[in-house]
Length: 113
Length: 111
Image 1 (cartoon, helix red, strand yellow):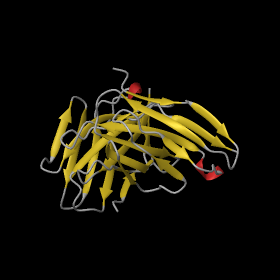
Image 2 (cartoon, rainbow over the protein chains, first blue to last red):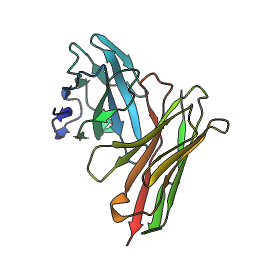
Image 3 (cartoon, chains in turn yellow, orange):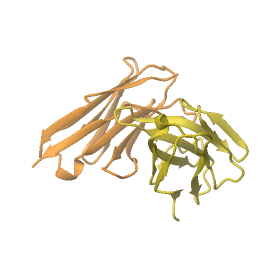
């Protein structure tokens, strides 16, 4: 199993550009989520999904969209990038309600200029 | 929502000594408390977790304690080694998948 994979590893955007961060897992996990990590602030939940076709907002959803058309994929879309979205983005998944452990992807470092 | 506070933000210990990191949470309905370790440039990885029906859990040199009444939990690392140097995050969840993380503690083990 590859586990949780993310692409790209690094990305530089100009203010106003849009892009999609890709996340995939091959463990047949129900739950997937996106976090952003900023210095001194831990990880903050952006959006999450409890299954295909179901998504919901986390703590910091503004400026981001998600969809979950398959169990495996959970892309994160930045609609109009802003410098405040410069961060490291982690995707994570967990099996189901009885198995809470979240497995993280390797992260995407995004810089918005 | 849940608010998790973590202290200290940095911790420097001599190799072989113990390290203790403390977290408090605000939501009395939280029932799952994991700890993650993140090495520089790497992804967070679960090192130990505890559920609210347990007061203490150990795994070799790592232990976690939970005080539900006071709403705080702690990570204890004994006999620290250089490879324990990393950022450690506590988190809390109501069992609905969503995790609220503390701000992190940077642990440095001095040789």
